[in-house]
Length: 603
Image (cartoon, helix red, strand yellow):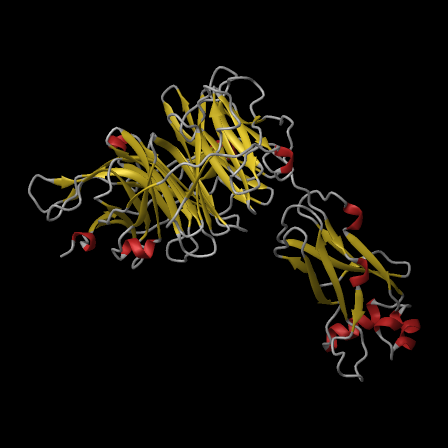
């Protein structure tokens, strides 16, 4: 049997989990209703593929004003949380204007994770909501840390995860979050990865030292999330399986997702740390990078795959990226079928690796060589890509900086310091986070203890408009000349704002002589409309059923106007064009029955 194909499965029953404790000031509960949830582990091994990459030099710097318009001015610092005690390790997700943040909280003997939500793009935050993780036997997991959040695009449903330092860091779990605006109703599910029977008397298998976990959504009905982390185990069969600090992957079991979660790992890959994940939303591939120790140096270990491959025992697609000095604290982002990895080095500043062929070959550039003063030591970088425009943050001298590139990382703008108080940023791995092209969070001690601060590069504007010339009434059966009743209305909505909108209602109303406005029974819904896009609608004023037709003959007597009106979910930058009114008469609707108006208007 090939070691790389060897599969070992063990199962551990976990009884039903139910959490009834109150959470935060909202008084809501964290509820878990998973029945007969079990743990399933699988051993995997992989081949190695080592390649050395040479570093290129930058040519020149560029002005940040030309990089997506983010400007060169300082930005307001928003307080995300500043309770008594220490808050750190921020992670955030967003859908439209709705945001959810998770962070560690330490005070005296408390070591917890809290959530806060925002409905205005992170400009103000709710009261904190504590995450309570309880085992099936009712035992509260008293210490949890290392939060991670992930959300599927265009959805308020999200997933999170946590780990615990208890039992030598052998406990971690995930959180189901049905609605990011209701974090009081969540489902934390912890797993204890110790005490697996080995079949040998007096010997049990266990896992320990789980570290730097990250969760990512995975658009799959069987396993909607994947967790990656490093860990160690003594698990062994035929000499295969024990490992120290190996990359491990956890997800719903693909055969029995309702009963099991699966933990897979590749035991030949060891001495890893600081995993970072990203996903190509155009397919099912998950990409990752971590540090891997090679003697006295730290290299980067790049990998990609998906749960099906890992579950079935396929080799792990990987490549080791090396340089003349150690590479640490990597961060990965995948966008537009390109892979971007930033990492700090012990002597060369921030290094950027890019690949356009799924990691087969890499271009390497230096982000900071031409934009920082001699002797500076930038570290803990983060990378984000949006439409070929790159943003990179890094920490230097306890300040957090932002730089940008509009030519795939060849040149970088002069950096902007984001923290308004000098030397206030805590310089640790994952103590800062570049969420997207508008949100940056970090851990800050300007008040004497650790708090979470943020900047918002720009607050996008909602600007929906009804295109006036698009509004018209027409017959439902325009191809049948004998039916001339115009009982339908057509119109087009355009998104002139710089943020996508979703689930926005459009109402149709009419006014008759000496009467107030009345809404029809038929509205339109904008389910998703990107910035700059248009969507056309055709909705009935009434349907040509006997009941609705006779009612319309009476209700529309004295008709003067029909109005199309958008009801934005958020404040509109130009509310004056959210509606459009056209003049319509009774005879316009009922060309053959106009003589009835004088009769029905008396009713």
